[in-house]
Image (tube, rainbow, N blue to C red; front, top):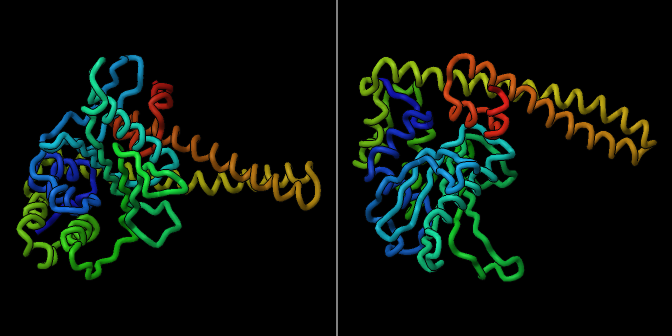
Length: 311
C-alpha cells in the first residue's frame, strides 16, 4: 500500500476539512481543554476565506475553520516553513474571526472564543518543548487572563513518541502527522488499531486520489523543496553580505564597539534583504508556472501587498 504525506496542503484539508469526526478528535486531543465539559461534541465547517467587512481591507484564507455547538470557533493551519511573519498572520486571522462574530450594534457578550491550532513542520523556538500555548495574560499576575483568543503552536520536528498516559490520542495524532509520508508502505499497528486514526490513514491511500490530484501533490512538494533551497541560499548570501557591510560599518564606527554594532546591524539588514529578494524571485518563478497566489504566499511568506507587486 502506498500513502501520501498528511502534511501536504491537499491531504491535510481532505482529512480535517471534510471529515467532522476526524477534526473533532484532532481538536479535542491537541487543544488545552481542562475538563470533559469543554470537549467539542459537534462542529460546523465555516468558509475558510476570512473576508473583511471593508472590501479595501486585507482578506486571508486558512486551511480549516469550523465552530462547535457552543459557538466557539477553531482555526487549524499546517505551516511547512517558519517565517518571522507567521505569528502575525495567525494573530490577524484569529482576530478577524473573533471580531466578525458581531454585527453593528450587537453586544460584546455575544462573542465566543476563537482557538488557533497551528502545526509547524519547522523549528522556531529555543525551547525543548514542542507544544506552545499562548494566551493574553497580565504580566505580574499570570492567573489574570483576557479570554477570547488562544493560540497553540506545535513544532512537529521536536515531537518524539513517549508514554504520555492520558494524552494517548495526542500522541497518536502527532505520530500520524510525523511518521506517514510518501515512502511509507506499512503503517504502524499502533496507529491502525485505533478506529479514528485508521480512518484518517485510509484518507491518505494513493488509490483514493486522481491523477490530477497526485500531480498537484507532487508540485506542492516541489515548491516546498524549491522554497527551502532558495531560503537557505538567501540566508547564506545575506550572511555574506551582512558580514561585508558589517565590517565596513564597524570600520567607520571604530574599534571594538563600532565593529560589534556594525557587524550586528549589517548582518541583520543584509540577511533580511537577501531573504526578501530570493522570496520574490522564487514567487515570480512559481507564478510563471501558473501556481495559485494562495499557495505561493503560503510557501514564500510574501504579504498580499508583495504578491500584488508581482503582477
